[in-house]
Image 1 (tube, rainbow over the protein chains, first blue to last red):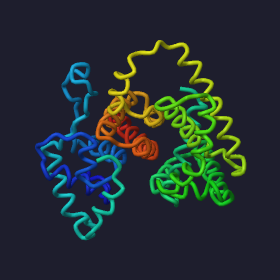
Image 2 (image 1 turned 90 degrees about the vertical axis):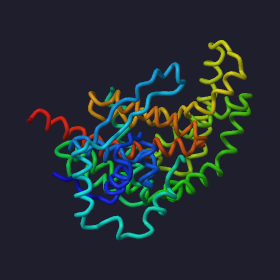
Image 3 (image 1 turned 180 degrees about the horizontal axis):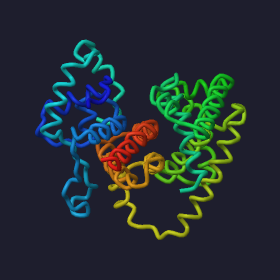
Length: 111
Length: 230
């Protein structure tokens, strides 16, 4: 079952599909999607619940690296397929709303 | 977690949902629809209280109308007042900054109860005094470490207030998920602050987390029921 294809959901999926094999952490996804930091966790949780997305903790020693572990997200092979399909079928496609992304990005918080 | 804290979190989420979006946010409507019984009653009551407040109080309305600019204006108007009280306690530099951050955090928390705009200056003075006294007492108790080391560390150290609000945003989540999101938020906050985000940017990040926390809770609860069923 596909999630509700809200505009932010579409932006997140498109960002993830740009490099489907690459793991990204939350802030990277926000930046790639042009969404404000701190707004995408519900979307990520929804995608994870559907099995489209997988996540794991970065395997580092925080004490040694001097920074906390990141939570990495990656589309599952099946999820990438379904995401492509869902984006293509979305009724209000992001691609039909020109100029939306820069507007949202302006509100983006940290860069 | 105490009942009082949960109420506080709910208050802030409601206040900020309205404040940040200027109208009822979509998420809030989702929460309202999914809430039943007593929870719904409380939500509706608080929401209408918030709306009354926004309509009646010109100052609060102006200050929370929806964006960073409005908040900055409020900050500019009263920053001198807070600074004057802090100076009285001879706190300077990073100490003064810490205290004023705490005062602004308290204001964010206090906003839903702020019914009389004229009382704001008095409230700020009282709160600043209290925080200064607490700060002075605390620093008397702690041994001072190499001040240079502390200063170098500061860039990667998230603002305490933002970390607190981010922590608050996990309190409404199902218990089993809290630790994960607490760690994830703190990690993101670290990245943001290392990238040089200002105190306010960090705070906005935390506020957005708070604003989305009910929606996230909704998602995570779905997950739970699904697992039980399968």
